[in-house]
Image 1: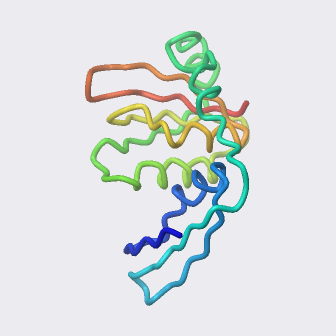
Image 2: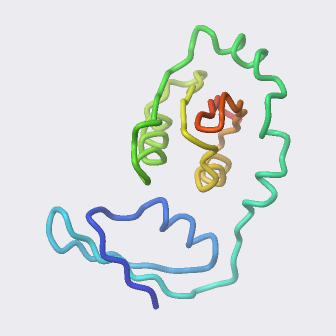
Image 3: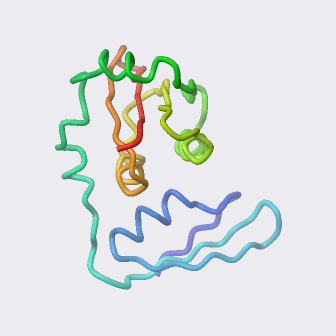
Length: 142
C-alpha cells in the first residue's frame, strides 16, 4: 500500500493509477490536508502508449482545425502553473466548454498524463511545439 499526504486530493494521479489496476481511498484531514491510500486491485488497463502513438501528436491538420474552430475557440495559458495545476485547469475548462467548441492551450510541455484522460472523456488533440519550453495544444471533441 502507498500512502500520500498532500494539500489537495490528487485526482489526476488517482485516475492514472486506477488505469494501472490500483484502488484508492482518500481521507480529508481538514481543508488543506489529504491522505490518499493506493493498493493493487486489478490488472493494468493503461493505454497511454497507444494514445501517444496515435496520429494526434504533431501538426497534422493543425491549420485546418484552427480554421474549423475559429468561431468557437477558448484560450487557456497554463505555462506559469506548477504541477498538477495545468492538468486540473485544462480538465475544468473542458468540463465548461460549450458544445462544438475547442480549447487552445499554451503549455510548457506535452502533458503526457493528460492524454489518456482526454481520450477517456471523448476528446482528441493536436499539438505543435513552439520552442523547447512551449507547446500549443488544440483539444476538441472526438
